[in-house]
Image (cartoon, rainbow, N blue to C red; front, side):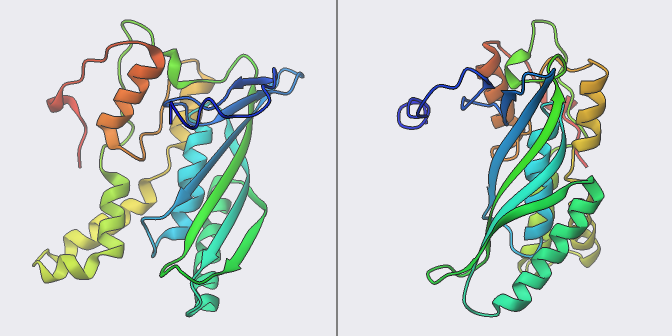
Length: 240
């Protein structure tokens, strides 16, 4: 990324406050009227049964940790040729429910049936607005800050394992109650409300959504972006 991606971003627009960089969850663009536009693009490739639900919530989290409430959502949906109609129905039902829960609107996108894939894949974009003096970045951590983890670790991964791979768990003798409990973690993947609350009350110097590499990867990215060293203690990490 540092070598091949970040140096190749075309024309430099002075209205872009935060662009592509390590650990930063979303771009921040100055609108010139006291507000900033927050934009993020993401993809869901590792989940199937909860694809639409996660597609909305995961990209919205990246907007919210900037201090912006997600308002608009676009998606590119790529479907295998087999049973594509039922897949669209299920995925868009999940997208609709998640969007209504967060109060955002699907404003466009692209849908395509394509060969060469064996499961649906979604690319997503979300947008939101924040005050020019109220946005939060990953790079803002200061010496002496405390690290706060909302809810706990392993929520999204547990939810995906207990939905997409439930049969594998059953074959390994995992209790049905545990599988059902893990699947309900899907309802906990959003951090929008807590992120907005922290930002609006000026309680966060930096925020980061550590989806891809878990807590350890998220802390490493936050430390890199903020040019700080982080101390974290295993027995203080909240787990369910």
